[in-house]
Length: 313
Image (tube, rainbow, N blue to C red):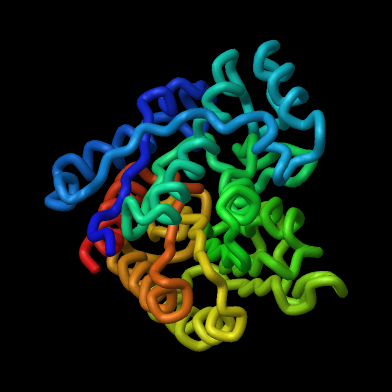
């Protein structure tokens, strides 16, 4: 069995220019990378360089022509939406961001690593089949799920999204698909306003979507209880072969865009709970991909806590 955690990162991720005042800025990765490099876990990791996803792979989760639409807006440096600015390089970097998550999936499915963390940007979980929004261009985690199924023969996949915002794009992509289980725990009400408890999957895939809405000022204990009492039994019932984590760290108590009070220690415990159930039902197959997190202190200490738990099983 492989004994190390793969870490996927590329300095070109810093070149996605959202402007100096935008929450989703390159400093998020700079701070997280510096914190990891100063931690004891850094030398324990397998460091892998990603390559860009192909246009064909983007179409695993998005409509035909969607990637060309994104390319044209980036080339013209026209914002995709009011909250999703892009620069000339953003299209290529978004392909590299998706490619980073596919690289992580490759490392785990081929047993090169025991698990993996892809520290990528731009994030992805708000991107729907046909629309970018919420700082997201391509839905990295959704494309990775399809990639595992189509190129590696994986059957059922589960996605655990603990970003503080509902992963509406991921839900939309898989709402009719019984081969992908999607769980999202998120503050409500909050952007994008989706993710109600009654959204449970379509008639084609009943029960394969599970949303848990959390009120503001909730902390570690409440999240841990939801994972133990709701998520883990659901995963045990579904029995996926692979678990993907949309690892947003904007539920941290310092984050400026939300009002949930998780700590870095809380994220450590959530990580352990997912790893435990993955060991039980999914041969330990876990890939985590960065989503949100907009306090530099909050994201950096949470990334270190998360990666330490991935590495120190």
